[in-house]
Amino acid sequence: MESSSRAAQLAAMLGLGALAVCALVPVVIQLGLASPMGGFKAFMLGNLLALAALVTGMIGVWSTRVAAGRSGRGRALIGLAAGLLIIGLAVSANISAGFPPRINDITTDTEDPPTFQAARTLDANRGRDLSYPGESFASLQRSAYPDLAPIEVSRSPAKAFDDVRRVAAELGWEITAEDTDAGTIEATDTSRVFRFIDDISIRIRPSPSGARIDMRSKSRDGQGDIGANAARIRAFRKAIDD
Image (cartoon, rainbow, N blue to C red; front, side, top):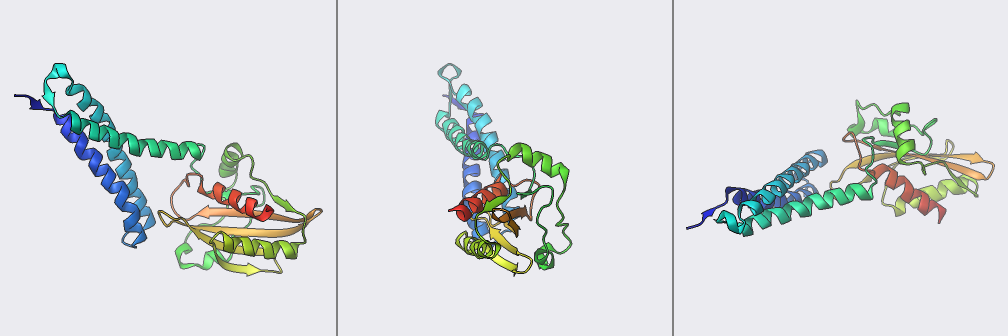
């Protein structure tokens, strides 16, 4: 009688567990039953389970080869497939984001970035340092996102201000403060899956071409942002240019 491969059994358990965690975490977050960071940590645990399933699945496939005389090939393949799916999606997401550096404060002007004023008064930001990290982030940003630069538009600062406010609404941001005299708008944006909230500051100034728009997008949680802040600035730039 054939003996069953323990590696194959473990691979199936790990793979199905990883699938369950990665599928349920976003639902739990959307229902408000877990914080964004808590949910994200659980999701990363699901990814670790997937990696373990991938490794044990390969061992299980080897241990259930014909010559070994052990059963459980189906379980090994389940773990291997689940691990490949989840790890493959994670790698694909990082490739799409260009393997971004572990920074979470991105701006179009690293030498004179827009500041946060109203954001400092929000309960969620009390006690947080909202100052720009400086050259330690700026050098990494220039290397990873060389396309991010001040946005020059051929319209008056007043018209640009109105356009910024309109684009912010179209992009689903929640405007938290605006000052027409200073030419500043602050807002927040909430990610769809994990419900992370990021703070946004936009500054409009006169320029020879009409108006210069600078934007800063800063995450409230984590050390990295998987390219989310840079992507937000690019989406804003495209919308304001259209």
